[in-house]
Amino acid sequence: MLARVLSCTTIGIEGVFVAVEADLGTGLPTFTIVGLPDLAVRESRERVLAAIRNSGFEFPARKITINLAPAHVRKEGGRFDLPIAVAVLLASGQLPRGAPIEDGVFLGELALDGTLRGVRGTLAVLAAARREGLGPVWLPRANAAEARAVPGVGVLPIASLRAVRGDIDEAWAPEPREAPAPAEPELDLADVRGQVAPKRALEIAAAGGHNLLMVGPPGAGKTMLARRMPGLLPPLADEDAIQVSTIYSVAGRLPPGTGLLRRPPFRAPHHSVSSAGLLGTVRGPGELSLAHRGVLFLDELPEFRRDAIEALRQPLEEGKVTITRAGGSVSYPAQAMLVGAMNPCPCGRAGDARRSCTCAPGKPEEYVGKLSGALLDRVDLIVDVRAVPTDDLFQVARGEPTASVAQRVLAARSAASRRPGGGCNADLRDLDLERAAPLDRECRRFLESAATALGISARRILRSRRVARTIADLARSEAVRVDHLAEALQFRLELPSAAKDAPGPGR
Image 1 (cartoon, helix red, strand yellow):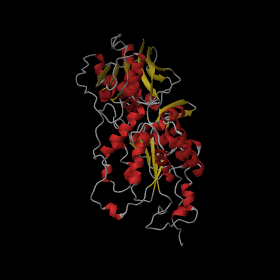
Image 2 (cartoon, one colour):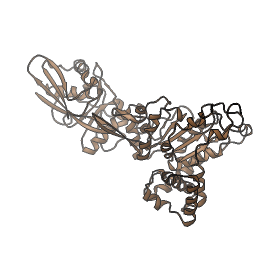
Image 3 (cartoon, helix red, strand yellow):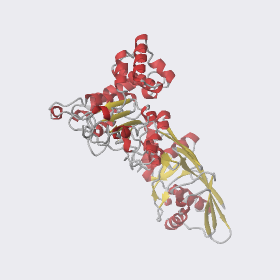
Image 4 (cartoon, helix red, strand yellow):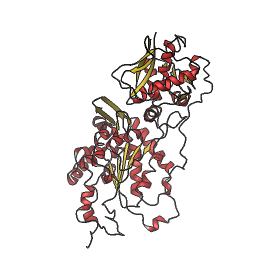
């Protein structure tokens, strides 16, 4: 007897359908799975056998062959437990043929008692089912809220293998809800004392989606400022929320019982992270993709491995990560804002008026030199974060709250979305930039003279023009003026030279 049901796996964040075929032949009782299964799929034999017996079915004492097609696609994880069990029960005549079983798509990991556990990548499966017009999708209750966030696809949430026989109760399934708010209160810019220029840089970066680097001594407030960036960003639109939630679903990081993630993500990996941890592998997305449409914060940037941060160059430019290995190629979205923080030298005291730098001669330059010029060319804003004076630290008056700045950011992003090219100003293509931010004669002369005097590269000039467009949007100006360009260039100066800013030891 032969039976066939559909399941689905993921390549990157795309769903790929897999036909699960079961053949019950004559001969000694065996259970073989073919079709490029990984270890977790091969181990499903034991889970499926126990789940079928403990669910009131009879496990057929036949030569059972399970084929997972197409054979060239690697099958991973426990998601194939349920479709394998259903195919075996269909082939042995213990489940009725026809709709909705043979028309359905099955995914779920079986416990030994036949109950179902949640699996990764449900959103990708639902998106593929909607694209191909397939369904219903049979899945564990644990994934129901996540799955129902994608409209237009029939979903049959079940608690155990027994439910496949009928009497499926869908009334229990909760409506998809947004991801829960963090336990800690949202950090507010109003609590940051002083730091006028860094806070302005945060606002510009949030409004235009620009990459930002903060340079300053330890304790100046770089991390404190960076962690307030998510509060400035607007909630994710529907399309972006689905894409971000799909990335987290594939990575197994979507909070249980939630629908779509609406808050822009904030990722802050430790500096010991590898390039694979930042970019991802063929088996799952990395930190850069997990920060898609949000913020990737790299604290102590020069302490990261050189190969890891240099590997960010192309993804930051293209907005996606493409990983190619002998077994195939996958792509992950990676349109994240890079926010970096670093000390001006190894001891962190260069440029500090209160303490002298204790680094050996040449060490500050070597420290700053860990960041290549090519990487820094992809950073739109570089701001010097100085230690807050004592008078500012104990001032009673609070600064401007995050909510007020976020309103300006939202207005600026709305203005940018209405222009040709849409999206964030940081992502404007060259042709769209010429249309969105044309330069009059005065602006052109100013930019040419500034570029010559500062030795700015062509890429950096274009990035400064995009920043100027964002500054104009924050000022509600249709045209880019000289003062907007001047402020943009103010945040594009070279990294401070430790040798010039502070005396070395013994001087």
